[in-house]
Length: 279
Image (cartoon, rainbow, N blue to C red):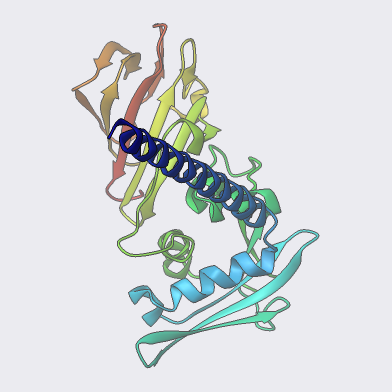
């Protein structure tokens, strides 16, 4: 009886060992596949990435509105995207061809590394285009072709279009956090959404950083609300000293001078909501 019990225990031990080895091999295989996928993602061509956004936009309800634009990725290629506004079965017609548009329109100029970052969800397109002053460098920009002079209405549509075209899926999700930002106005930011009358963004102000310290950017022609979600930030609004901390909001009227700085040892975070005429 003891001998039979010993044999059974030995058999169970062998089976357990084999299962453990199989699980380890399976885990190693999964890890290898994941690493390979990451390498393949990093090595995707610009044309493949752009095509993926075109295919995704065919399922977007905003593709019902026709628009023509170009995309240029230096040293990678140039393309034309035409959103016809025509329904094709359950999707919308969005055409992708090589070369810039024959008809003058606007063109996205995107550095390849930035296109990869947008593709991988590291940064969104509006953040890649964000800047404090018109002449500031951005790794993604919207440029007008010679002969293209958009109306104010057409120009105002580009920001929301950029959001919808360069954000995959529905509902559209915008990640934000330490690794999703660029710098402008003196700190790190992630743009959420821009369209006429509303601009929203998240800011992360590190210790000793100063926001809107340049007098040229201290007054905006529209009101704004700052929602503090972490830490404490010191500021000056219309010459009056103010402190705003987590759980508080502050309203800043249009054309009022304001600036901010972090005197603590920890990062402060806030959501900025700009709205009204001129926003």
